[in-house]
Image 1 (cartoon, rainbow, N blue to C red):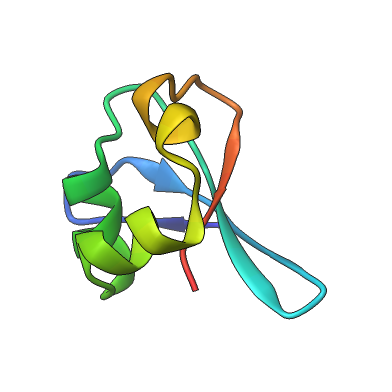
Image 2 (image 1 turned 120 degrees about the vertical axis):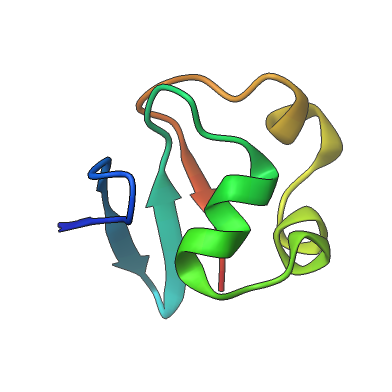
Length: 64
């Protein structure tokens, strides 16, 4: 677990080599990409459109 510049707790989880991000309140694709040093395109390529459109607190999305 780590904290970003806004003191928001973030969490990375590795599952079978894929790095996942656990959604917290206020997350956007843009903010997640910035936190983890990846592009928004990478996040969109790793995840289905409907998953990103309905992100919920506690949900896991792939970031790497």
